[in-house]
Image (cartoon, rainbow, N blue to C red; front, side, top):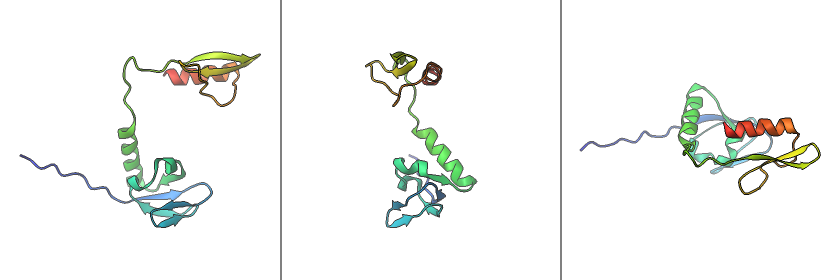
Length: 119
């Protein structure tokens, strides 16, 4: 029987972008600060506020994102349609009739959103 050696996670280098500070374990990360952390330490909600610095960090983040993507299950795809809200304004709605856009859109914009959702 072979032993499976799990690849050990390594610290990656990131830069905090945007305003405000972010707490990470017992540290406070300030705007534009470069810091090192494990990818698993950074909450999903804050992944948009940090960018990887260096090629090694970038490759590790890309590999992690590819693993986290949900797989498309055939026949389980949500169906969206365009529904007119008022004259010239439209909503893109799901099967239950719930609008997925926050504000009403013009016809062209709603068509582009629908096209992106169905691809």
